[in-house]
Structures are given as C-alpha cells and as structure tokens.
Image 1 (cartoon, rainbow, N blue to C red):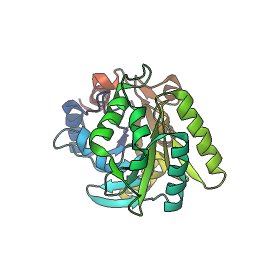
Image 2: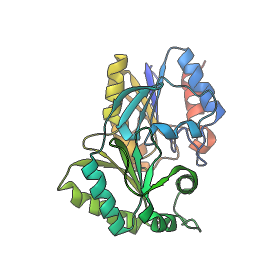
Image 3: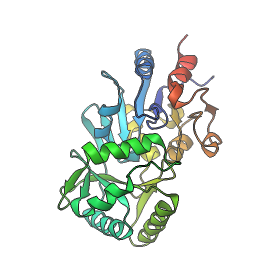
Length: 284
C-alpha cells in the first residue's frame, strides 16, 4: 500500500469485534504499536460510548471515539460533540414501535438504555429462543445481554438528551415493515436511519452518520479526509468508506461493501482480520 495514512478509523462489530462481541488482545497490541509509531487510531462505531468498555481488553486505548453512528465524539472522557434526538421524536417513535410491536432500545447520554415497562413483554418475546437461523450470533447475544443486564425498564422516559434508537426484529419481514413505517414518519420529521444487519435499523438525528462524525473529529486534530484510512464491514460503514482516502472492507463483509473499498482484508473478524491487515501494512 503506497498510501501512508496519518490516522485510521476502525469500525467495531464485524471488524475489530469478533462474532462473540470481543476485541482480541492482538488487536489491542497492534493499535498500541501504530500509536507508538505516531499514527492516530480512532473507533467509529454504531455502538454507544458506554457500550465500548465491556467488549475491549483491559488497557485498550485509542485517540478518540465516534459513537452511535456519528451522533457523538469523545477523546477519553472529554465530549467533543453530541447530537440529540428531540423528546417529541422520541415519544412519537416509541408510540409507533408499540403499535408495530418492534423491539427497541433508546440510548440516553450518560445513562442506561431505556425500554418502557409496558413494552417489556413483546420486547422480550422477540428474542425468545430458539435463535432464528439467519440472525447473526453476535447480534443475538447482544440482545440477550441487553435484556438480561443492560436495559433499564422504565415507567416513563427520563432525560432530555438521546443518542439513538436501536430496533431489532427476528424476521426480515417485520423489520422491513418497520423501516417502511419510519420512512412514512420521515415525511413529517427528518431523521437519519442506518443498518448494520438485515435484522436491525438505528435512528439518529437528520444528516448524521459516521462520515459527519469523523469530519468533526478530524477538525479537532487538524486532519483531512486525504489523511485517513478506514476499515469496516457493513452498510452503516458506507458513508465512512466513501469519505476517507483509503477504504478497507473486511473479508466477512458483503460483496456490495467490498465493491466500494480499495482493499479487502485477508482474514475475517473471527480470524483477527484487522490485526493481520494492520501488521502486514505498517509493521516491518
């Protein structure tokens, strides 16, 4: 690779995370090595900032994080930027999700994700065993963990600042019906949606995605898109991969993601693909 980036942005799920939702120690070590060389390494993820610590090795460090598909950016614990869904939109979306019996998680800033108690029965039923054959094990395990440990079941919505909604369905038919409902709602109020699997959709503020978040982070570091490489694997990575100078798709990415990339990793996320790729390109 002739291009020598000044900074690298890494997706998490399906990229540095394996399908059991863990980042390997080898990936941590290669990130440490690159940062020691003077490269900036960032995370650009659909996950909320609070979700990251639970899936990375002890001592995992990067130069910054773009979270919730571009809704927020952090350097350590410092908030670089945060966008918020309006309370009016939050209330309307939950109302429609209830009518459609769609699994949802609402992510407030600085607090556990919320699902209302009145929706608990159908939300829990949506992830009842057995796992549907085509749903990825990583997404299924994440939903199981959310139900068991991470969702705060509330009588009413609390807080005023929200980073995103996450929606899931166990069938493509159900989630596609919900996507159509969201498209109808967009005629009344603008927002952005993003998907990372055929069984989910996420909702953010209008005109926000990973690329817009990366732009805001680059401004802080006085870097430009021409200085950047990114690695990703799914549809919510497309804005990022289109934006950067050098785009890399994971071996486990769908063909339409690989088609927009400048390179493809030799190994999958379950084979430490990012570790092997970065080591081969940047470590002598």
